[in-house]
Length: 376
Image 1: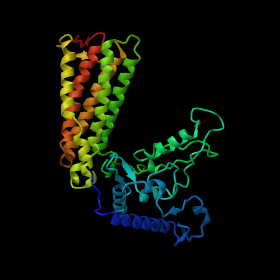
Image 2: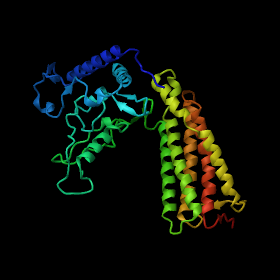
Image 3: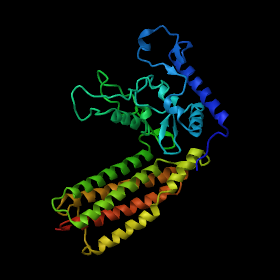
Image 4: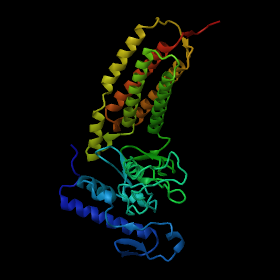
């Protein structure tokens, strides 16, 4: 069970408020003016009206979401702020959450009910009925649906950093944005909060795993839309969905080099999550499925060409070749950074290796024919 970073309640509370006050002071300094306080809000003494018009004032008090957080989360946020960090890892979900410091870089409330919004959620729309002038699929039909949309936006892993703006007139419900702009400088963050260049071997591996999952999803869609769906295809679709779930776990492992700070509380929590993955069992399960499927096929002693007379079989061959590339990228990560990972990276790599063999027999099993290599 994850435990608090700090040891006592008064101290944690004091740290939280001290850091919040300091963050507001830093913010006003950035705005080129001496800070002054009016009704609990920090303002700059700068007389330049033009830049100030687009900047929301920082609120020293906790926002409504912060007031509902546990002391453990508040202490974790305070520690991240004290270290000058833009993000921290939520130990309960494993999500990356932006701190007040990270959110202040936008200079405005994005309207998405961010957990640590330093602007008091000033641009968050109220939980009233929100409809567009022209009725359409994006119009909220009730106050409850509008509230649900707002609450959902605050639960996204990194929705806190979004710079979303309301459409003209402010009638369109706020939605979680899919961009944070934090990667515009060519870097991206791992689950540990560490930032690396997007060309790093870790992100090459993550991209290959993501691409593989997309190809698997396409294969499932092809089987689902087949004119004559066989019982075997239904079983194959179920297996492919399970593979996609496991590929998400493999991506989590690649994005979590936890061995670098093994004593950190957030790291310990991430290791607990990784220990819940069952790559060894899943690898054995894949091997059993390979044996079962292969036993029903004609023994193969020659090279065959990908295709087999239908698109689903051809797509599974694409999965096979993409899987091989993902495995190579994961091996490279192990070669470069192996000492910073737990054994889960090795286990995930073995799983992906076995997976490519599965895609080969799976492609043959739904093919209408084997197209063999010709030597003439």
